[in-house]
Amino acid sequence: MYNKKAYELGSVRSVIRELFEYGKKRAAEYGADKVFDFSLGNPSVPPPQEVERAIADFVATSEPVALHGYTSAPGDAAVRKAVADYINERFGTAFTADYIYMTCGAAAALTITLGALVTPEADEIIAVAPYFPEYKVFAEGQGASFKVLPITRKDFQIDPEKLYEAVTPRTAAIILNSPNNPSGVVYDDECLKGVARVLGSRSKEFGHPIYIISDEPYRELVYGGIKVGYIPNYYKDCVVCYSYSKSLSLPGERIGYVAVNPEAADAKEIYLAVMGAGRALGYVCAPSLMQYVVGRCLRLSPDLEAYERNRELIYGGLTRIGYECVRPDGAFYLFVKVPGGNDEEFSERAKEYGILVVPGAGFGAPGYVRLSYCVAYDTIKNSLEPFAALYAEFKK
Ligand code: PLP
Image (cartoon, rainbow, N blue to C red; front, side, top):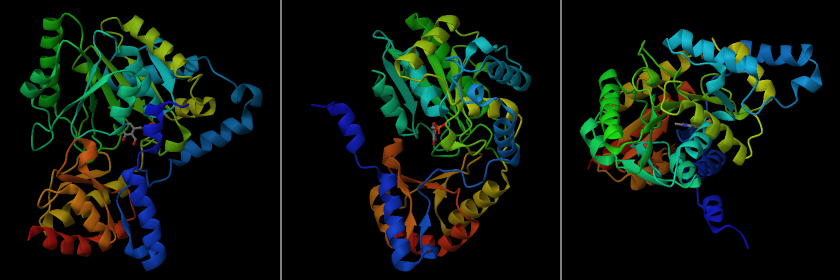
């Protein structure tokens, strides 16, 4: 006897994993330089040197039992205060340590927040397409019914009228992710104001707050001076889920946080529900050493130069060939419209050229493919010719 739902989740084939395995096989057959793997979203720049120095320094100078011991469940008090102070300094907000809960990355921050917000009366979670596929797993795992707002505008900003129609009395929260995986789009000021207006009016109408869960692993990965709006400054009923996985290139170290907006309705209760959800999910505390490290490295930025060069090359290269896509302002993804519109077929056929791209269907956006451009510059350079041949084939 075993849990059938969990079994299904564990045994379902992962498109990205299969592409990765295929890439390895193909590299062994034809050579690594004939494989253009754009499937994985792993940072390709190392963590800033200061992060490595901080790790070494904590290990060398701290008393080991304390350093590697548990912190309190929501995280070390000094680290939480440092995080809150830093947010306030950047965004003019009023967080305190009592609203910060350290987590194992954004994945844990999201599941915990969903666990805190989903209720029997309001069990609906809305994701805005294109969206990170794990949202469905996280939401359903917390007993939510998962609803998708399909793409409402060609530029992937959100049409407030369409959101208005999608929200119901059962909606607990909507998840926003900006900069976005898989499109790289940053929601602009007008978009965020529109979302805030609609949710504000629907909350009033339905007699309970509809929260925004702001998923922010890519906040620091933006190009050309673009500003990423801070959701608490647009809409008070919100919870921020942050991660250092991409901003400090630490995905394997599992560190991030939940920040409950102190001005949100029932903020204190939500924070306690966050603690309770974390407890029920078995998160004793986030990794202690990593808490101390990010507490010291809050002000560091990633080295964006390599990502930005890659963005220029891939966006310029593909659009010159004729591919259509929205110019990404952040993250390290490009969401490309498939000529002919069949994303599964395109991804399959691309493999014959050694190109690995992820079909858009899993992101709630069939007809597109996602490319992760956190790869070597030469991989992009050498992929442009095969991309052109693929385009010619599909444009027919
Ligand atoms: N949210 C989005 C949009 C992501 O792309 C990812 C990881 O790729 C996550 C959440 C999970 O991030 P973490 O590694 O911090 O758990």
